[in-house]
Length: 289
Image 1 (cartoon, rainbow, N blue to C red):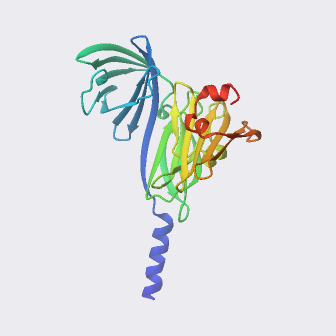
Image 2: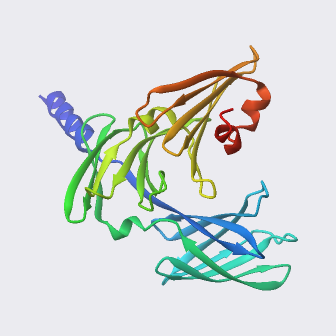
Image 3: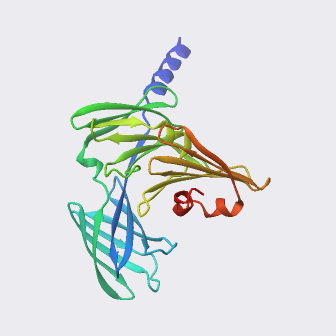
């Protein structure tokens, strides 16, 4: 009888125990600095801690600043002062514009940056997670006063919900962490439809985009993954088309598969190591490889 009672308690707690919910919002800002494009990506936690990654002009280097947001004012600082790099950035939020200044080499420069998408807080008023069974959950959100239930799978005790514009329509989409591997991190993706105010599951992104990264300057979503020692993949979402680059360094063979927005194969071709290493160069895709 005691054993049965214990198993009943375990079963109930197993089914209804909800994981810890972490919420992050990623926002892309664009502007000019000394007549060069300035891209600043803000990663804002639910505690209002911020990591800022910025890129100036065509430079490949991406630099990091850390800080916080208080009363619509953002203060970012660099951990170490380096020549020709921002030591600090201060921005005041005014709707879609972020006005302020940045310091480089001890000199202050004015900054005016424009936000690329609206905040999820403008359309979502409530967020919670409900456990369905072992690793199946529902993200329960209220969007424009209507409840939506987004079902997903996750192996994590702490589930990260990330709001970010993934298809560059100026609205916040959702990705939910499925598992944090040593190398590959996968997500369930839900894209927002502004016409219906509904979040819809994206099978295309969920099955293909691992370790996602958004390039706001080119409006590109990139995923990168590795299988074992030698097989690598780079997946690119560009203008609603998916390009999957893969290369086996052991066999010295690679290929590119181009899918349209209906997930139909448009083209399949062999690629060299140089082409794979240089992906995702947009000019490669624009020039039809």
